[in-house]
Image 1 (cartoon, rainbow, N blue to C red):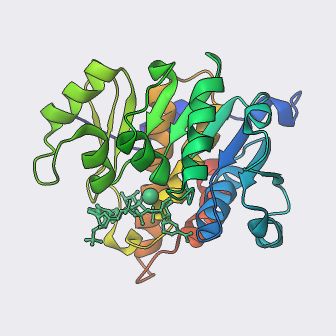
Image 2 (cartoon, rainbow, N blue to C red):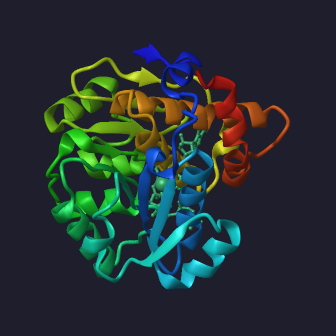
Length: 276
Ligand SMILES: NC(=O)C1=CN([C@@H]2O[C@H](COP(=O)(O)OP(=O)(O)OC[C@H]3O[C@@H](n4cnc5c(N)ncnc54)[C@H](OP(=O)(O)O)[C@@H]3O)[C@@H](O)[C@H]2O)[C@@H](O)CC1
Ligand SMILES: Nc1ncnc2c1ncn2[C@@H]1O[C@H](COP(=O)(O)OP(=O)(O)O)[C@@H](O)[C@H]1O
Ligand SMILES: [Mg+2]
């Protein structure tokens, strides 16, 4: 396994061109945030905006619009129950799952996205969307443009590989057979791509073990994929995943617990350290 270091950040994070505008930094749509899990989509969207996404849209339950805007006026909002097929048309990158929930309506939204997505769009499937995808045995149109970000239980649901038995070989086999990227999250997160040596994270801290931490990562990954087009998908995913835990580890030196929103607030300063 290749151990990730700061090098992945300097390889991926680029200085912005003077002659550029918001449209050059990704059109991202994040889909999730049902009536119970508004916080998840607020964190994911905040992470995306603070990582530099040019245009961020959130499709969620309208109950979450006001709280979202109170935290993040930079984001646009849509109702996830209405015309999700039209809502995703202009997106470069789609993040689905943070706080999406497991309702019949959530499943319908996921199915529509999987059906309507085109070959130029990148899809990140997180949280509830992984559980629904696994439960319903759904299929991907473009696995090469798809990233799953499961924790260990979600990985078990997705691959059938039980917790405690999730060896590098077994996960790599699944990734090779299915042609997707997987961020297998744990206290020693690994990033897998088809037919390549996986990346291992040696940064991170138990101070990260708090709800919303993975939602934050999903937003960062979506943001990196929309901005840094000179890098490969796998490099972008690895860089965002490394940065998330690198910031957390730094903050854990003088914070007993590192909240997702604290990590989010520090993303721009940490990215600035590594731009090249
Ligand atoms: N503020 C918000 O709105 C928040 C909203 N959220 C949203 O909630 C939705 C559901 O996501 P979820 O992860 O909470 O639930 P689920 O998929 O049932 O997994 C939990 C089960 O798996 C087990 N487990 C075993 N190993 C594990 C591991 N390494 N890491 C984690 N779990 C592990 C675990 O076992 P136990 O804790 O009992 O040991 C338990 O039985 C999703 O859409 C998400 O975005 C959350 O992000 C929180 C903040
Ligand atoms: N003990 C730990 N050490 C390092 N990282 C951790 C630890 N516990 C959790 N994390 C990280 O926190 C995140 C948890 O993701 P997830 O369970 O999906 O959170 P949520 O769905 O609540 O947002 C992952 O990035 C995981 O690697
Ligand atoms: Mg999660």
